[in-house]
Image 1 (spheres, chains in turn cyan, red):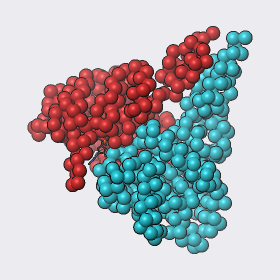
Image 2 (tube, protein in one colour):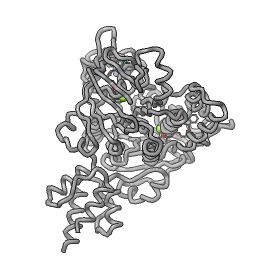
Image 3 (cartoon, rainbow over the protein chains, first blue to last red):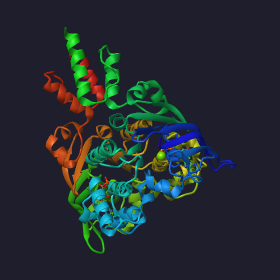
Image 4 (cartoon, protein in one colour):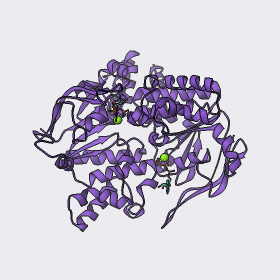
Length: 285
Length: 274
Ligand SMILES: Nc1ncnc2c1ncn2[C@@H]1O[C@H](COP(=O)(O)OP(=O)(O)OP(=O)(O)O)[C@@H](O)[C@H]1O
Ligand SMILES: Nc1ncnc2c1ncn2[C@@H]1O[C@H](COP(=O)(O)OP(=O)(O)OP(=O)(O)O)[C@@H](O)[C@H]1O
Ligand SMILES: [Mg+2]
Ligand SMILES: [Mg+2]
């Protein structure tokens, strides 16, 4: 077991009129090698929750264990941050050096890597996020386009070679090609290198495609926790919360309502096509 | 009318020049709903910032209702007409209380006090942020910040609405609602809309999609024609709508259906098959 939350609650500005209880008695754990999708409506507490994973926020009640050890008392937050890399929702908040190279090199430098090792890691991280090393290494991160900035922020975390990656809406602002490339890399890191990944996203297609397990957060509480097939069958509940099902699932539901005999829990193009072809053939018989 | 003629924009850096827009010409008529798409770094935000004079042409010109952005004395008239939402809502926050933030635009435009109240209330209501009116904008969640930014520009009631990826951090319902608000302003009040987006689902509602590649216009067409240009789409880095991909697959299986842009359309055409 890698990350374990036990009855965690968190309130912003406690004991003030503006107090906001963002996390309400949440208990869940992420095992080594899992690929978990974290979804939830605007303001449901996703970004707050993940900041507990590496000790950026401390729970008001409950505890957070990393590999069985309590952050702060039994394992230092610093060590946890080397194991668990977090890409924040606003990449600007993650960039602070005056060149892209220095920004991406920041993690490996802190890990006391050799100069060659640092350069190697920066090159390969920039490559993974689709940025040309020579074109970008000397640029100031603050003069990049939105999507370029996002890519640099992701590269910075990849360069630390963490054993667990937490990404807060990493594909927001990326173009389709960038999205596809980065998701494919994440898939590979998970499948081939056993990285544990927690992905926050509002894109249900992406969640259905990528993850083994979907955790749905609503008003600071876990509402559902299961495989994409299980969770996306709860369409009415998801819609009520402000979420949705993947696009193809929504088509299958529409067809089903109009008398087509199709399964509702398919998310992949070819599967969906086959099921529609089957239903059409049955109808024409 | 927005008239962009031979616009070139060069960002000067110490050690290099970055040509973000190259000799680009484009007209946008009043009442149009235009979407800009293209790869990261292709120049969309740079182009958007030219529409309210935030950036000025290195060469060429941009005119809003005949007022050239490069003339200092025109800026006031231009900013009255063009409301803008930036890509990062953090860069938009100017006040320490949500409602003051939303009031900033109309106040600057000299809207009378009594009316400002109404503008703020309506704008916050339309994005479901009324209960956060007294909240500190910096402390909101990503999606909440984005909603406040949208309220801010709605409260200005601009004639031209420029939105740079306004829904990138909203949940599915929030995304839908913002597109509905935009469509309504466009259809019912004749507001001209320029929307920058990476979302194919959002772009199909436009009258016209302008595909930008390396600072130039690669493709400018209605959504239906745009997504018919399979090869150009590749170069632009734009995916086809999922509904179109699926209709192509079904066509290959021998079914006579047209290329759908949305799932509704595809469901309809499948149902009318028998
Ligand atoms: N620094 C803060 N101070 C006070 N309240 C905060 C702070 N950050 C977040 N909140 C509040 O806590 C709640 C949860 O916010 P959080 O950012 O975790 O949501 P989220 O699920 O990440 O939403 P989004 O999808 O919009 O990013 C929201 O109501 C928000 O207004
Ligand atoms: N302030 C700046 N200084 C220097 N170069 C810049 C600046 N802003 C943007 N650029 C560069 O200009 C080009 C166009 O950037 P722009 O922000 O217009 O792209 P974009 O199409 O909006 O991309 P994205 O989809 O990532 O938001 C990019 O190569 C970018 O690196
Ligand atoms: Mg968030
Ligand atoms: Mg941009």
